[in-house]
Length: 190
Image 1: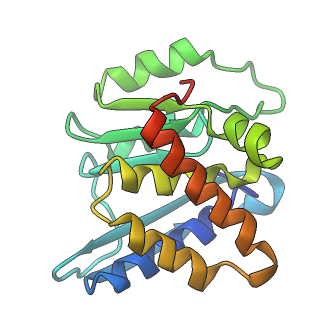
Image 2: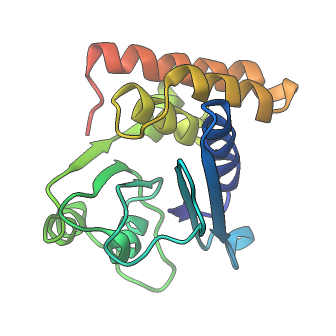
Image 3: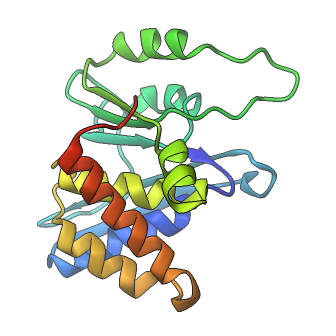
């Protein structure tokens, strides 16, 4: 989950391609009505030996990636005690609404699961690569290195090379390598 402009549709394409590299069946779904105006975006991916539907049932998600902190709350519908969360500690204010504190968001998520990892991915990418939009690539790569998703880092890398246009590829490969380095150092500033 995230908001328009964070690259969720591209991340979905990369993950689906990585699944195909591993010769598994994959189905995807996307919901992005107001994405062009910074609205909510939700994508779903299911993969395995044989998949019949792209949609994830209530309380049935294995893993939730939230590129925006408040959007993680929307994803609670799909979570259960077994669900792992990887959350970018980054919030976009909602016009006309009071901002929900990070502590309040975490408290609500902890009512569903304790498997929560916060990463200041946007800040890390801004500092190291000069562009916070790379947070998504950084996080899916990190999820692979940490075995939060059952995809090999090599498959994620191959998919990045196939999906990302040439003019943006070098920077996205740097985000992948930054995730590898961060995983090795285990200093992610959550």
